[in-house]
Amino acid sequence: MNTMQFQKSLIGLQENMMNFALMLTANREDAQDLLQDTTLKVLDNQEKFVDNVNFKGWVLTVMRNIFINNYHKVVRHQTLVDKNADLYNLEVINESGFNSPDGSYNLKEINKAIEALNNDLRIPFSLYLSGYKYNEIAEQINIPLGTVKSRIFFARQELQKALKEFHYHFD
Image (tube, rainbow, N blue to C red; front, top):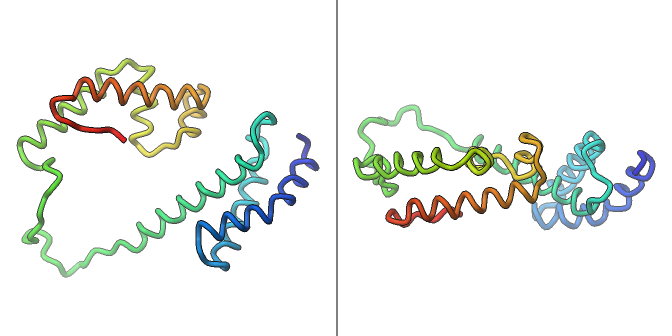
């Protein structure tokens, strides 16, 4: 797809994009900002679009990812710490169990099980756990997107078998 076709296709999707942005944000002003951010990002990354990929799906995925990333930024920004709080004497209920001796042992076992995976499974799975998206992993280690998804799926299966006594479920 040449630059002119790309831009025409993008202009043709503006109404669909606005509807999707409204669905995500539930606010017209935020939706317009999201539409603008997405349009700019798509134009800046035109070279990453592969002709045999569904253009509309690709654009809406870019929009969804921008929305999610912006949401996480807002949440991080709005998380405040009371600087006057006595952090050493807080009454905290620890439900995760990771700070208990048993919980630490379980975490060590989980890490050991992840390290025991072969590189083909461990690398994509570790990147996924670090917060990378499937497409970012595919780009980073230069394998197809479907292969990334399969390897993460198989890594989860192997970890579930290895850790079945802990009854952990990897989502």
